[in-house]
Amino acid sequence: MLLSLVLSKKRKKVFAYMKLRRQQIIMEIITEKAITTQSELADELLARGVKTTQATISRDVKELQLVKIPMGSDSYRYDLPQQVEPSQSDKRLQRLFRENVVKYDYSENLILLKTLPGAAHNVAEALDHSGWKELLGTVAGDDTILLIIKPREAVDQVMERIDEMLR
Image (cartoon, rainbow, N blue to C red; front, side):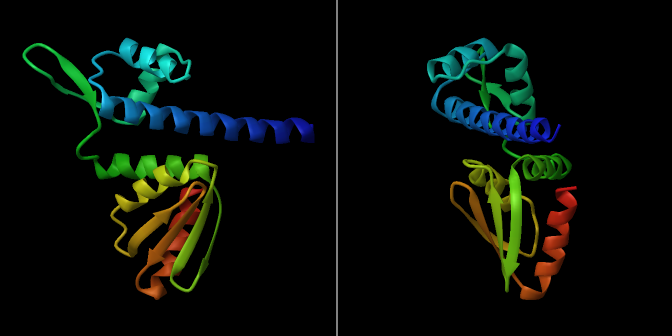
């Protein structure tokens, strides 16, 4: 029973990492090429070694909030959203935290977040656009994010917010 629970947790982390990587590749593809259909996107993913289904691509398009923009007279292509609604941004940040943040701690005005490998950049980007007035900025590596908080007295408030997002 315990072994299956441990394997289940590991499997969840692997799937979360695969999803994160696939979504990173999707963002790279649509910034490099004019992709007009989900079928074209699936072909491009396959060319980069990512086999997926149309249903998965559809969910990714929705989660990434991709938009279609005009490309000439009668065609449209996928693009990254220009402005994300705050409520959607908050939901995305909470989802990213729940799926990717594995532990966190603080010292003085610095908070350190540990994430799954490869996930730090996406979480940091979402934090940078979160509108948290106490957050001066972030520095992201592969699996580590440094949050710089100002003033130092606001660290407890930010730690509580992080606790809430992980619940």
